Length: 325
Ligand code: UDP
Ligand code: MG
Image 1 (cartoon, helix red, strand yellow):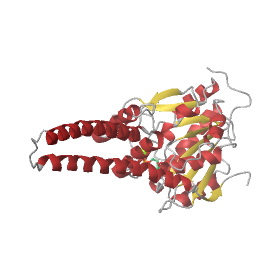
Image 2: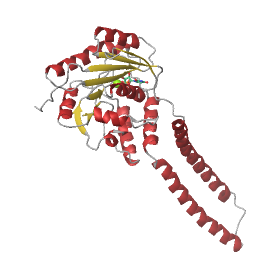
Image 3: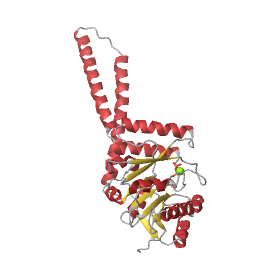
Image 4: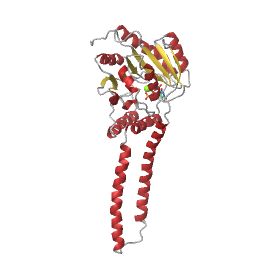
């Protein structure tokens, strides 16, 4: 048994919720149960609590959060965002709320696909000194063939682009208050939390668990959003695509120099034919290459555009259940 600190640490469990009315009736008791168990065994303090972030839901999610906050004062708190900002920014707003109000925060999805009993192991690691603990899925048996393979491809691609990511880790993680404070220093709009752990702390501890299937409601991550997340991950963390364009441009330039010399030599020796192919093929090739390059450069210019606007990443509309209010 690791030594438990005295007084025990306050834990905040941060849960982003988007149209989760079908899940919340299961999620809130499930998480409170888990908290009670950890309080009983002395792993965390009585004042530990859950933060439910309503990410601009269109269903009864916020009403359910308000109800839970009234029923469990101080233990269940709600942050209502003014609009739907997506999973990562919603999670960030919950972590932002918890910063300075806890000793450690655990983020978990509202569908409880991630095993809540693992939180206790995360806190044990925290008590042993870990500042950042990542939940890692043992296997992806509960995923579809498609999701499994696209996820694997994504990690490979990110690795090739020089972004160090922990395989099979989503957003189930514990961060200490120290790490949370440092997280606030990352002010970029396109924040990709999953790529950050190794930047936030050099020592990252992992705990493995089995992921269950969603018991109610449906996934809020259709393929479109998954692709958007992957693309955001690459372009927010890596300039390798830009560098590839430069390298490709340099190679094409070299080849065209050789070809020009060849053409000039042919012209001077009087052996040139009025060739159509030799004009049209490079035209096509270069046209395609240029458009591709401009497209990728444009992506980054777009990012710069968004960053320079310095827009807030989320807007809090209302907070309920905060005992300090
Ligand atoms: N979510 C959110 N905003 C969104 C989409 C999703 O806060 O725009 C939340 C959602 O309520 C859930 C978590 O993000 O708690 C993960 O979503 P989901 O379980 O649908 O994703 P999957 O597990 O299928 O990848
Ligand atoms: Mg899920």
